[in-house]
Image (cartoon, rainbow, N blue to C red; front, side):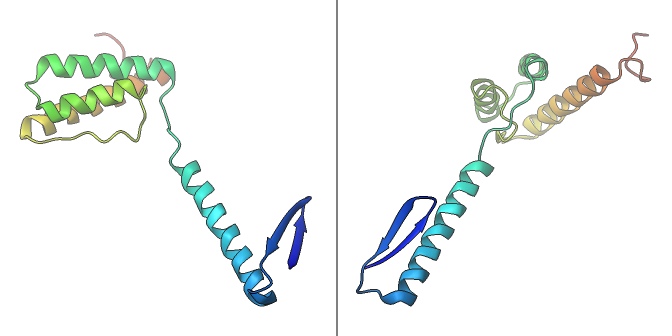
Length: 127
């Protein structure tokens, strides 16, 4: 049996594999573990800050009142709320009204962020 020790963790291969195959098997296992870790790290939720999330949810509620959106977009807004504003949320848009409503949602939220970051910017001050 071939034994490799790294940081006090013994890794053993069957003697039937042979030395070359053992190293290849251990290397492949390490690569799979690294890729799995990278995939899980990459899929971690990215969320807005609490004040940004509150603003986005308030704007989403306004959009739902202003437009007759499809159940698909309404469910997407609800999923966004339940995820606490995960930016990777997919918003389903089935109709032209959905597209217009979602565009307004994005535009209003970006305007809020712009004015929140720089309140004296032209267009942000009350008229």
